[in-house]
Each structure stands twice: as C-alpha cells, then as structure tokens.
Image 1 (cartoon, helix red, strand yellow):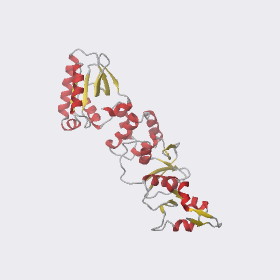
Image 2 (cartoon, rainbow, N blue to C red):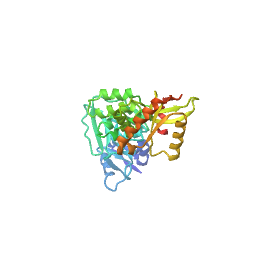
Image 3 (cartoon, helix red, strand yellow):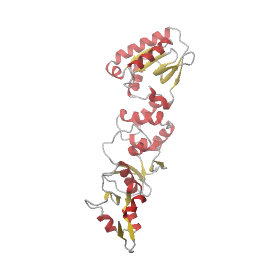
Image 4 (cartoon, rainbow, N blue to C red):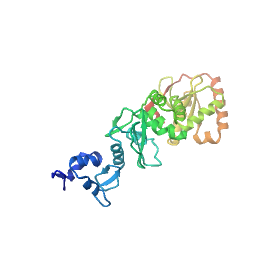
Length: 326
C-alpha cells in the first residue's frame, strides 16, 4: 500500500514495519519519512490499522500491544536520553524474582531538566544521576544495581526486598559494593530497608526463615554461626549443604525447604550424623509457631556438641551460583 507525501512521492506503508523495532514509531519519524501528519493520525482512529499508545508514539498494528512494544513505546516517548529502570529493566536483566507490579507503568529515567510528563502507562522520574545505559535484549536499560534499587526503594516489606537482593548477589553475581555505592549515591529515600537486608544477604542469610533463625540464635545467646555452608568429611567427600554452621563444635542447623523431598532430607541427615556432626532440623513453620522450643533445642544441641570431641570435618561457604541447589 502506498500513500502520498507532501512532495508527491509515494511511501510504501508495508515497508515501514522493518524500519522500527517492535513496530513502534514516533509520529514525527513517520512525517520525516514523507507521510502527512493528518494521514498518520487518521490511521490511528478506532478501527484503523495503527494505534496511538502514548503521546506522539504509535504501534504500527491494531492488535493489543505486547509487553516489549509497551517498553519500546516508553523509551521512544522518553527519547532522546531516557533509560529504562525498575521492574521492566530487572526482567530484561534476567531477574526471575522480580515481583509482579500492581500497575503496568513502565519506569523510565530522564535528566532533571526535562519537562516530559508522566502518563498512566509511563512513570517518568527526573534525576540528576543519569546512569550509563547498557543494552539488554535490544533495550537501553539502567545497570542492574540501579534498576534493583529503583525497584525496591518503593517496597515496605522485607519479603519483597530479600528475594531480589538474594538473587542479584548470589545468582547474578552482583557485587554488594556496587549496591552499597548506589545506596550511598542516592537521596536516602527508602534506603534503610534494603541496607539492612543487604547486610544479612552478604552474611549468607538468603531467606525469611534464615533471618528468623538468626534472631532466635541471638535469643539463645549462642555464638553467631556462618550461614549456608557446604560440609565435607575428613576425606573431603561432600556431605551436603546446611543452613547454619558452628565450626568450633561442628554443629549444623538444617532448615527444610518445601522443594526438598523427605528422602533427600533423610539422606543428608544420615551423611552428616555419620561423620559425627550434631544436626538440628527444623522447618520455617516450626520456627514461626514454636520459637521457644527451637531455642531450647538449639541450646541443648550446642551444649552437647561442645562436650564431645569435634569430628574432622570442614565447611566452606556455598558458591553464590549454587545457592539454589538445596
């Protein structure tokens, strides 16, 4: 199909799709190619072949916009210097624990001096600290540490923050110093919770159950253990992972998680105890429902472990990328 331009030349509309990633175009780009502005917007009328998704931004098709098209539209709207951040940027970085949003707005950063207005579809944040964008799956996004904190600073609950920080540090290999540097560089709004959770994550605490167990260890007045360790016997044979480890007395805490089978738990318990390790088993529910029972059980186990001869076993911190193996 062809349409006339003001100069009398003809534009092949079916060729336009290949010019614009995800078939998202700015109206002014189409006019610069030779289309009449009136023709562009006429094609966006109800029932027309195109649709207007943001002020001055079109999808060259009439099907409901896909998520990539909405992200591309937000970036085209924020041109020339907009950068994607927040939830959608985390997804493009490959973060699997990014929680679903209660709204579908795409979060973009623009320089402080821009007068670009936000819309129900686009959250526009003006900042004096524009990040150096990186390319992820064809989109310009903020670095992981910036996208991470732009997401979590709006959260008010630990269970929203911990999975993201845990995945970023232990699965994605994001250096905690980069997160801390981003926290220090920001304006401080909403930073207290991620700072606290990051400190726990760096110390090896990666779940809410482990955080609760750490609090109860303090209640029991026991030495602080090391969290998420891998234990080997005297011949360096791998015995298994444990949630917490008191190395001086070879005491292990094993918090069963839902993904583990009963047989797997029994096998690991057998291997650990056969090597002479004192093992305390519990579950997240028991930690919540019977904390006093757990504290007393742990205290007695530590006393018993301290009295017997320590077995020749060793423990090392789990490799960050193996943290999902338990």
